[in-house]
Image (cartoon, rainbow, N blue to C red):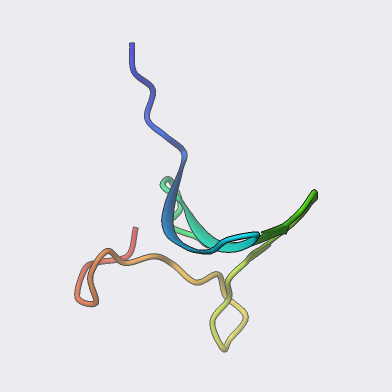
Amino acid sequence: MAKDKRFERVYKEGGMSSREIWVDTETGVQYFIFSAGYGLSMTPLIDPEGKPLLYRRTPNAPEY
C-alpha cells in the first residue's frame, strides 16, 4: 500500500552545499533548508506580515 508523501521538494540548487525548498503537502507551508558538510539548517519561509509562506503550483493556483 503506497503512502502519500507529507513533504515534497520543489526547488534545489548547489553542489557541496545545497539550498532547497520543501513543501508540507498537508498545510502548504514552505521550508528553506541549507546543508553543507554535516550541518543542516531548516526554517519556515514567512511573508512580510510574519505569516508562513504558502506554496502555489502556479501564480493563479489556490493555496493549499
